[in-house]
Length: 248
Image 1 (cartoon, rainbow, N blue to C red):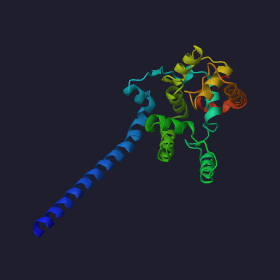
Image 2 (image 1 turned 120 degrees about the vertical axis):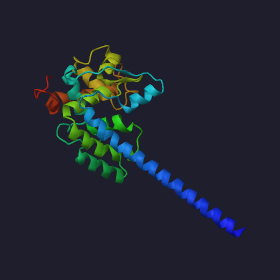
Image 3 (image 1 turned 90 degrees about the horizontal axis):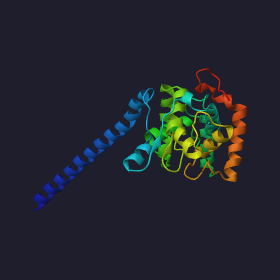
Image 4 (image 1 turned 135 degrees about the vertical axis):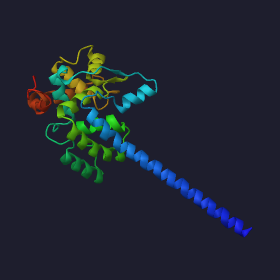
């Protein structure tokens, strides 16, 4: 009986080892797939118009998705300026990640102070294309190398074009500036007043609660600040134009 028990124990241990090896191989293959997907897809996105992870998630669960792709030259220059000045004022100057802002945010986090996350537009594109929007430190850590890779492979012009077409811009599955402008104002995104462009820009952090069509006093105040900055410094976003200058 003793010999049988030893044999059974050895066999059970061997089975567990085989299972652990299989699980490890599966995890490594999964990790390789996660790494390979952005490496393969990002060059394609230079010419192929992508869908975002939130758009895909809503589609797979039967929820409403509205998105009409617009080329960057078809979108209002005022919208480009207000979005850049609102979300990432150094967009044309950094290589996908604003390390100065990121270090400051890390210091705030370690000190227990409030922090915003220091997400650049490029990091937001990486998140929406490959990671989803559920907050976590792992996701934030992955955003950094992905943003650097996106900036290396894609032009600033294409990155902003993708951003303006995949950002969630409304409370009921409206994605992209065209759907957002139509839902909010019944207007095209190619010709927007400063007021409407600014309201759309400040809607982006929380489009399910912030309503540009019926803005609160606080939202109007923030939009006015963004508009003033964009009027003064809007040419900082000129790297996304073919002429090197926005028509503001």
